[in-house]
Amino acid sequence: MSGENDKWEMYEDKRGEHRWRRTASNGNIVGAACEGYVQKSACKANAERHGMDGNPKGLGANDKWDTYEDKKGEFRWRRTATNGEVTGASSEGYVKKADCKSNAERNGM
Image (cartoon, rainbow, N blue to C red; front, side, top):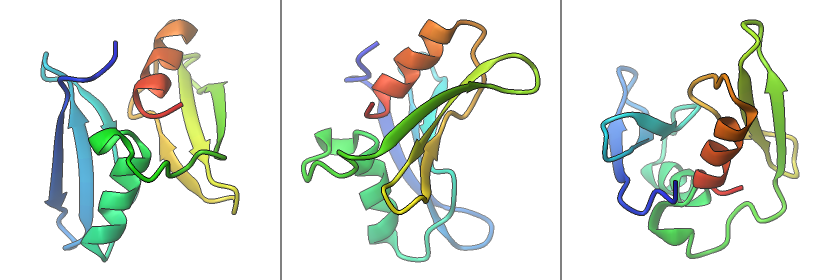
């Protein structure tokens, strides 16, 4: 799953903050902002960090990636910047750890 045909969308949420989501060709959301951004440019930078436009600035190269089991026993990933801020997380749980890893790779791991 390379995600080269994924669709990227930037939008405003109910609070007027900017968010992004990444949709696969089958319509499934395979990535999304885990927080809203006041500035659209900050939202775009976070989307690029997760692979939008090929991450032209190499953002997040030193981020830490964790895979863990949630309360349902499903696998999830979390991405943490060097300052300790969580900059991304899986938008769903995965039964197979390999599927979780594949989604993390699609989002920049």
